[in-house]
Length: 392
Image (cartoon, rainbow, N blue to C red; front, top):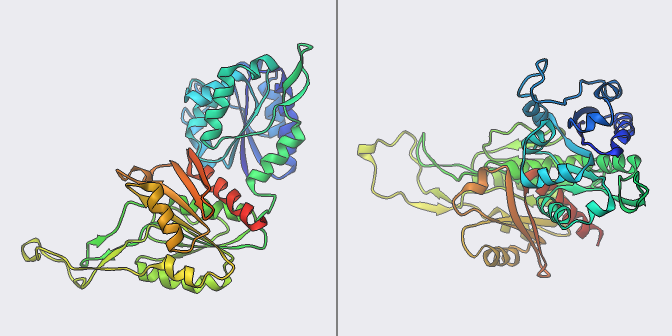
């Protein structure tokens, strides 16, 4: 479990030592990224000794790869910023990237956990309140601050959360809480392809990122996961049984084969709604092409699953270009779903994007807006909503 600990320049920086120790005791590999201000409170050498890895302070260290922040972002399972000063929180909210920590924060696509620490007067400032609100809306997670005595002899809310509690929260996010232990998730992802001839097909721009993020997050929470995926360029998630398919019919067969063991179904795939009625066995030459291609509907996998729903929790996705909420609510009721994730894909950008904004609807009429945030963060929040319904 690769964790990057971002340390910013406040008096609580010395508590980063306890956080590093706690994470390493729990089996995490920890790489520390410090701001220059943080190095005024605690030396990089101290955190290097505790983490066992070189500390990144400057993007322009001659001994470091200038793209080190990108490499760290690719392998990072959690970015933990502790302590997070008002300055760093403001930079994260504004998308400012002027040092190693804030540049890394723009590159990561993993969950981000922020532990604020500052004077109570600063924590109560409207600018800080707004920056926290902006980050939370994007999916950033927070722990603390706590109420207590401050270094300046002030008393109030602004004290860094207890390092042990920070480590516990980090491990929850990484999946050690095993909150879905005993559950069997069936997740679908990606597009399907329906052949027109030997080299052409009907499809859509779905990347599969959302479904893969859900599968990965569920495994970290202890679930057994089967992921049925159409054609994507994404590697198989660790710990997930992946079934690769191409057509809607193949996806239907794979889903129905896995359904009897599933307790939760998350249908995130963008299945092609139509297929050519009579695909040609060889390439159709332009000079030979007919003016029209007859198309027929593909199997309605979600509706078929709903007829076999039983006690399972069933979650669908609605990729819409107009009347997004209205069309999603109709689909929720028509398919007999427990939850539906409404996604505005007008223009097609949301399909391949790393960040997305969605609305989760339930049968009681409740709408939960998530994002804009990385799909990994959206996946975590969706699983939180699923867990709430399991516990109800």
